[in-house]
Image (cartoon, rainbow, N blue to C red):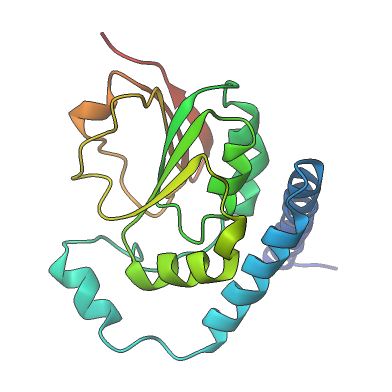
Length: 191
């Protein structure tokens, strides 16, 4: 007889397998399989390497919270968030990590401003993507919670479940699609 914990672990594994299949299918449907695969291989390699010297000091010096310095692709949320994005919008992708989801969003959006605070993650991503970076993606290294929002942005995407969602006031006039531990949520703009 299987214990409750063993069942939960088995369910999590099945959930991950489904999410992985959805991510692969999403990127394939957008013609982005090659970029996704390159980024995935690079992310796996980065995870195997030792933690960078100075990483935690960088996080502390920028008042970052929890594991904010680290990027883990949240594939469990990609399909749901993607389906909530209206075609032709301008997106602020907060915590863009290795840009894989920003590139997928670019297939639907007019423009994506992909903001990542960790310069090493963003640098690696740009090196892997190279000239395959879509022309409607602008990669920015900085703190999205402190930077001004580009004027044309009408949708903010934030899939940082490790971060408390105390969004800046500047975001309140835009549609916010964000993930939390209990799923994906949408906040409509406030006048």
